[in-house]
Amino acid sequence: MKKLLAAIAFCTAAAVQAEPSLIVIIDDVGNNRSLGKRAVELPGPVTLAFLPHTPYAAKLAEKASDLGQGIMLHAPMANETGAKLGPGAMTEDMDQQTLQQTLKSSLDAIPHVQGVNNHMGSRLTQKEDSMRWVMDVVSARGLYFIDSLTNPASVAAKEADHAGIAVARRDVFLDNDRNDEALQGQFDRALEIAQRRGHAILIGHPYPETLDFLEQQLPGLKEKTGVRLMRADRFLMQKQWQAGERPEELSRLQLDISGS
Image 1 (cartoon, rainbow, N blue to C red):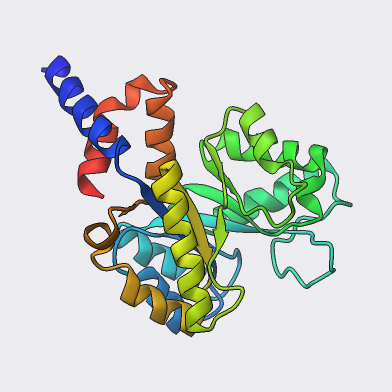
Image 2 (image 1 turned 60 degrees about the vertical axis):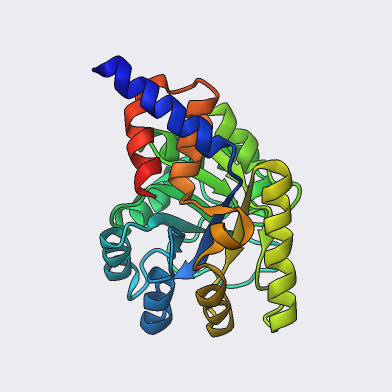
């Protein structure tokens, strides 16, 4: 029976591998209840990145879990401009114990958390020691990491890879410009990357314009474009399995794929 399940899972995973995937991540969830609710209720599997210690993060993460969405900590990290980071900020002047305790507290504030990405972080993600300390915590909790790549000099993904963490990098920001034409252009760019390379990671925010756009674009995406939506955790699990890194996850992967 186990061999049969393995064969079914292999065929399913092989078929999915041939399908390009779009991983949609919505950052900055937790400060606004109504916009956060719309983000959590987006059609299709998406991943929500919650700011820690914000008024609505915990309740919205519970709802996201109930709806089968992906859940991340959007971890505030020091930036080059000095922009305000909010609660849970990690900065370059923190020693290892302080930084790691800050991260642990932020993770504890988000129910059902599966992974981490950086909120801002153009300064901190360049610091090898700080990123190593971050990845120690991420690894110990069995989470994944997405480098939002707010600075091309980021070493976050490299340190995550060194720590053996499932990791990927952001490809496209959706909504730096929120007019319809700009949103469509960035979305099309992400689809082109997915179709050419096999996957793309697209990051947006819970702006009304972004949510309006995604509520129109996501339904029937696979039928319209041949690109399937996928949660970040399931994408990374599939990626690891295909690389032969986690063969023990075979039947779980098959169940995840069939349910996504």
